[in-house]
Image (cartoon, rainbow, N blue to C red; front, side, top):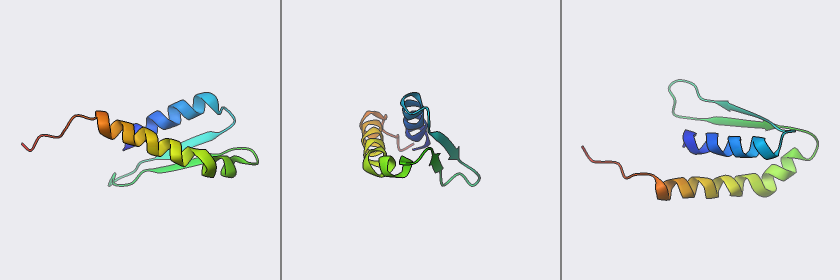
Length: 71
């Protein structure tokens, strides 16, 4: 979700100040794009850990999110 992605960016930008994070969320608001840029080695670091970390954050959000009502 956009909310969990924003939390991820907040946490990562605090520890990885050499990275630049850019979220794009435009009409019709059905897709979110995240661009991360940084010094040499950024791509390798992202491929080794960021994707797995985001998956864990998203899974934690799904477990704690209130159930939607069928109203």
